[in-house]
Amino acid sequence: MHDTEDATDHERPSRSARKREALDVLALATQLAGLSAARLDQLKLPDDIRAELAEVQRTPSHIAHKRQLAHLAKLMRAHVGEDFESARAALANAKASGAREAAALHRAEALREDLLGDDGDAALTAFITAHPGIDHQRLRALIGQARRERGVGKPPSAQRELFRLLRNSGSM
Image (cartoon, rainbow, N blue to C red; front, side, top):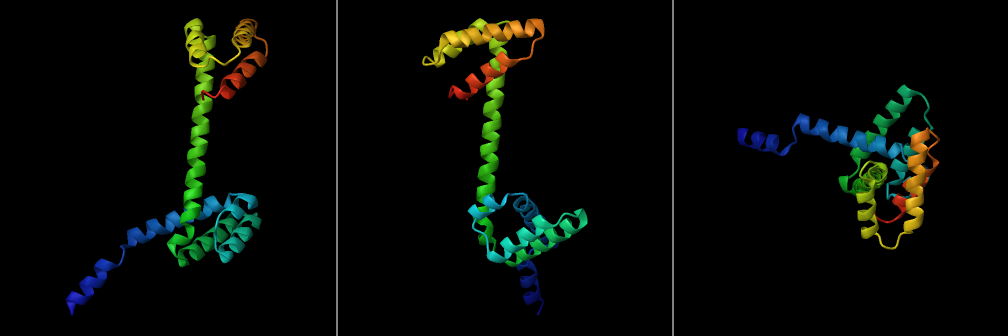
């Protein structure tokens, strides 16, 4: 008789595992509740989950919102895990895309600082070599303007324009 009980104990997930799974579902519910209606329409979600998401988004009170989120998570746990795999993948893809965009902006900003720095001529030569199709005269003019703006403390309009040019150059 103990053999049967031991076998069922090993097949069941531990309390900690169930708690982790519940917290993961709650985190997914929170992410989904933060999305716009248009973005939610792109995801393949069950109808009862969509209705509950709409209710969560309509709830303004903090405590009531938390209670609605917990109810949403409970409904989500009742569904099969595969129902939300596409939503998880879409959210992960969006997060990775945002990280790539942020990294590209950081690279453009660092390049702009290199171009405006003390060793700007070497950075300019390297950039022009890497991007032969870029308007060299415009780039040099923007760099000169940006340096003059920094020297006199003017608003950084040329620096912003240089940043936009670097960002749109396709190198980032």
